[in-house]
Amino acid sequence: WVALNTVVDDSVVDEVPCMIASDEVEIGRCIGRLIIEYFEKNPSDTKNVAYIEGSPGSSYTTNLTKGIEEVIANSEIKILNDHQYADFDPSKAMTIMEDLLTKFGDQIDLVVTQDGGMFQGAYSAIEAAGYVGKLGIVCQGQDLIVKEKLLSGDLFASVAQDPYTEGSLSVEMLDKMI
Image 1 (cartoon, one colour):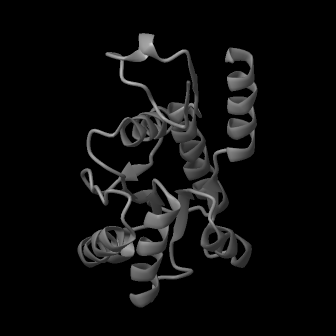
Image 2 (cartoon, rainbow, N blue to C red):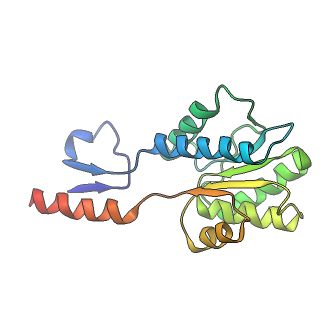
Image 3 (cartoon, rainbow, N blue to C red):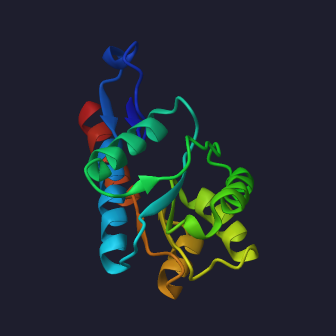
């Protein structure tokens, strides 16, 4: 069988003949580069980021954060908040964003979320508080709302995985294994 778009635990990796997935750390690095690009295109005295993560202990969450931190480590970019986990839940992301806006308000230059659903929740809070257009947003995700907000300019950038390539490569590998 083929493990698709997931990380296989080391305890069973020998049982899995084929694994096809995106490089999660590299996705994080891409987000990190977009954070730097945002501040290059939007100069600011501060470079403050509010960061909403997925689930604690999730390899995806951990690896994205690792990649982002690698890229921004030697910059003036500052993540304002400690780990804020929304469990990939838009309503939790909305609540976290409301709290971050209450605590940091105008100090936030950029918001980063680890997926499109959490982006939607954070965006709802940003919109309700009147901050749309006053701060940037970057996310990982590729759903229709992400596309709509990219096209409107409300979302600075998004990193998307390639489901077509992952899916077709999986079928190709299954065919070889059968």
